[in-house]
Length: 219
Image 1 (cartoon, rainbow, N blue to C red):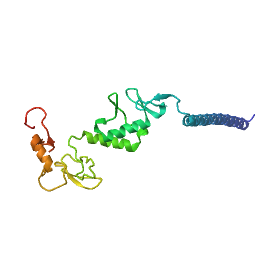
Image 2 (spheres, rainbow, N blue to C red):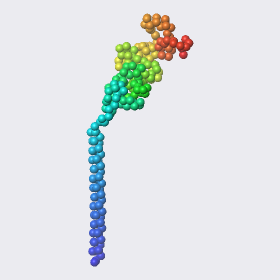
Image 3 (cartoon, rainbow, N blue to C red):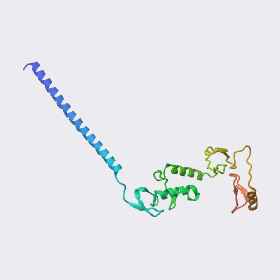
Image 4 (cartoon, rainbow, N blue to C red):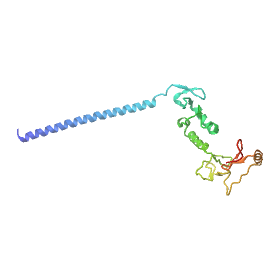
């Protein structure tokens, strides 16, 4: 066999090996692709099953109304009691109206404000109320028809503007904003009562206070 023929045969052999190698790689890639598609299909099917899966049939007694409700529709407190949605909403709304009930508690443990159960609006009001009750020198709108709590925007803020009605209020005397020093004027009956009871005005918050125990010196 001539050198040319041998070279041609060897070249054809190499091409054949390369073709076989490419075929194997193609088969491997196709197999891997099929596996990936199958896994993706399984994942989608599992996700659909999770969405369509029915809620648990386990029922628990509400610590407030004593009715049985589906556990998935209730909230569990730190003390392992359960509350239904309607009772939980009522507890949080009552706490907004009555400071003695804030924050809502069960077995002396605060109940978490769940947005899923209460809604974003009620949760936001709960957060705002918490800020209000932590304020040791609260100021409310001087307009009695409004009387909204006015959060402090700056440490030394003297006058604040109500975001609801626009009325400006003095933070020191709690009356309508004014120029100069605060002038404390009480109703005639309240003035007379304060004199009879010997009430004094706090030098820090300017509120009338009554002595229950201790000396007459105000610090």
